Length: 457
Image (tube, rainbow, N blue to C red):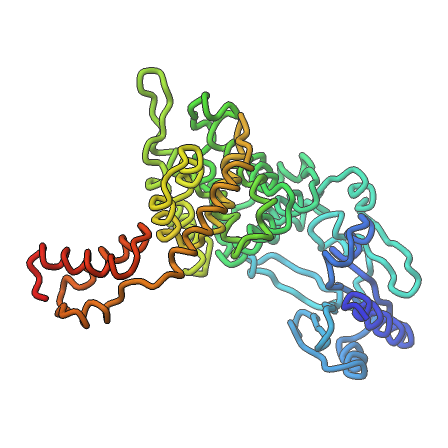
């Protein structure tokens, strides 16, 4: 039995036992929305249900008869069952007590009713409820119609701002579902302060937009509409209006190019060793153009923007991304993103491409970023030639690195005394390796190099 079917069967068991005790259980949230949209179960394996009309103790007793109960947020009335992808919640009311997303006074109210329970949800498309036993749809806020019209609309003017994260959630849902955020919701978002959000929550919404959307650019375009780039994404905002050389970038400013690259990178996302890292690199790769762009003799240039992008991207990633290894990966791709296409265009030497791949942390993902960079522009660069060249050169690099090479032990065995310059000598030997010099010849050249620099052998 598939996981989704197993989860549905367990949800039915919960609903039957709840009904025996005069309660009712409903499918809620994204599960109902996606079901109405015809989104495949493979894309949403988890189920959210809400149980009405029972005291917490009664619900806990039901869950205990069906499996091992997990208290996710006992004071909030949120549970799960071990081995099942089901979030089981009780109706609750929330009251904002501050500016942060945790500044909410939450109280469980099993008898609040379906209207008030749905009113506390963020968007109409997420407020639809479906009775688990009868299949009846309850839609108090027009969510079904908004799904038909592909619109993200907030449920309540009074409660929407209680959680500032909803601004980012609106943007990522619009990107994932290819919907448009309603004008009135955009207007409401403009007045919400996002500064108190935690980086973890911001990263979570950004990750969903970059990994689950076919057009991640919609996330940023939506935040731009709402004037909400400056608090968490000022480096992205800085790309707006930055000109580019029209000969190579007929699409317009750096913002437009970056959005096109983001969307182009989607086709390589699942191939990447780190899909999130690849998409982040697509986002930050041209940050340096905001500070490097200049017009010389009437021609727009961005010389050195790759290097200039790195410190700007580092600050951006430090603010949002928690994993240091991921940040390092993205910065490496950013620094070298221009070279693959340039090398392919110029048919650069194997030695040059070997050096490039050796320098970058993620070899294949660098290729994917370069291809997306070429496709995310006008005139669009046909990726086939670059892809063939780069694949061939990556294979040659791997062949080179598989051959015997000069090691520190080899140098010591030939009389070289380790000292403070030993690493420099090894670096010279490594350059010969990248140049494809056979080991014995490389060893002789390295020893000569050591003697010429007046080191004892």
